[in-house]
Image (cartoon, rainbow, N blue to C red):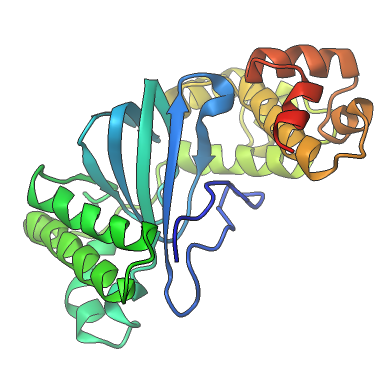
Length: 294
């Protein structure tokens, strides 16, 4: 199967829509390099699938609402499904990841694997991010990743076997806490999702801080506090970054569109301001960025 391109396609609630693998084999592998530059990060998103993250070199910063993990070279973590997260270099790092449906392991919801093991693991209140141990877990991931990267003979068996063993180790480590009921999302997380959904739906239109706050029925002051507490950024800065990322995608997807048309489509009322902010964000002007992608 080889590696897939690491690109986010999200709906209005920040849920990633990009398919990971195929219906028959719901698993995908990715390799990418990230820095702490604003245009070189993986923005806040979530997906239903589990994700295994391995740092091949450097250091990466994984963020979830209310917490962050500095992952050094050789670190391996498993991220539960439906967890809002973002990733960046600290200051730079190389990512290897595999995103897969739990049904790759269980074959469905009516099997002993799902009923006796995976269902409880997915619902575990302490399983947002599980930090694996160096050694065997890394070898299992490396075997699965290499099999997909090289499109090895019968790679599906190798991938399923090694990811199953990795998930089993995660289950064994969390076993004492699996019987607890998974808590509801925090109020801040719910509010953040409401505000992100609003910005995703309306980024092409004029948006004020008051508009963003109203999406979650908050005051402007509490809106700012909620954003800083949860994702460590201001809503206005997040909106600017999101608009610029949409502009970057549009520049390459629509080569005939003028800079003015791209900036207007992304919610900027001034092409010059768009170009100025784009250059700060991506370290190159829009036209050069477009040319580099051809």
